[in-house]
Image 1 (tube, helix red, strand yellow):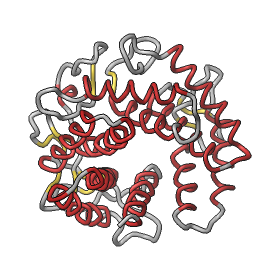
Image 2 (tube, rainbow, N blue to C red):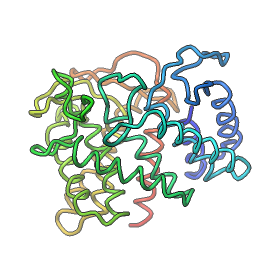
Image 3 (tube, rainbow, N blue to C red):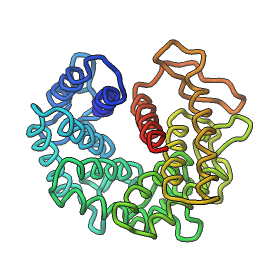
Image 4 (cartoon, rainbow, N blue to C red):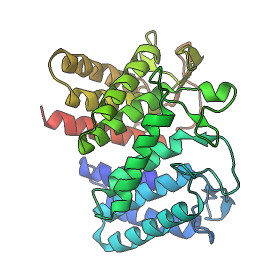
Amino acid sequence: MPRQIYSFLEGERLGWNGPAIRIASDLHDWFKGAYLLKEGYFAAAVDAHGKVSDPTFDLYNQAFALFGFANVALAIPEQREEAIASANRLLDLLQQSYRHPEAGFLESTDGRLPLRSNPHMHLFEACLAWESVSEDPDWSNIADEIAELALTRFIDPVSGGLREFFDMEWRPYPGEDGRIMEPGHQFEWAWLLARWGRLRNDAGALIAARRLYDIGWTYGIDESRGAAFMALNDDFTVKDPLARLWAQTEWLKAAIALTELSSGPERDAYASDIPDAVAALKIYLNDVPKGLWRDKLSPDGTFVEEQAPASSLYHIVCAISELDRFTRTL
């Protein structure tokens, strides 16, 4: 639901003339009413009637709740104070009950493992969004903490690749899961670290962003399909060749971010990847009903026949927004 709030509000900014404010406002109210549990966090799922069907705490979902509230506070003046208050209450809960003793946040209050980099990535995104809304230093402090955690723990110090799963000491999780590196997340973290590095004038973050992009581009794109696929091992061999839509949007966003960071031949090289990433995304938008998309491209070049996941809209809108912003500066 919070991702849909963002999508409609950003869609209006991009020129959609539908009732974006009304839809986002109603979604905001329904999300809070249906998903908010007495424990203070937001449930993992509810049914179509608003009854909680999965009360599990998931840090990933709390990160997106904060992201959705930031977008409401920024775009809907009538709900700004309510969104700020909701975000502050949730952030206080995370700080008080889900803090990792070293840095970052836990997956539960009872030590559930593995710890994951992915929820932190979206919490990082949410904190950067809140910097546009609030002068509260907590948002910047947490963004800085997550950036440092990524640079020192999530990213392998030898290869420069970003891992997904960790033990309680932020070491790679034992077994095969600890080896996973997803090309789409190499790109998505590159985009975020490039943004943060520019805001903080942090050269180390910009170097790391370039390396993450290089890994995603060199090892994570299947030339036969022209698309970024799901997962690598930590030696950059292919673990899962399925290519999902969202990875293409993150490739596009990262290519734009690094083009903006660069000059001369380096800029030209990143810029030349932008149309390739656009072409990859368009594969998923062809031969489907208007306004829908495919999601899973198999190694043989065929799509899995399934319903279009609503979560993809956030990725599509964000990529289009970045491309729109970038082309307006040319």
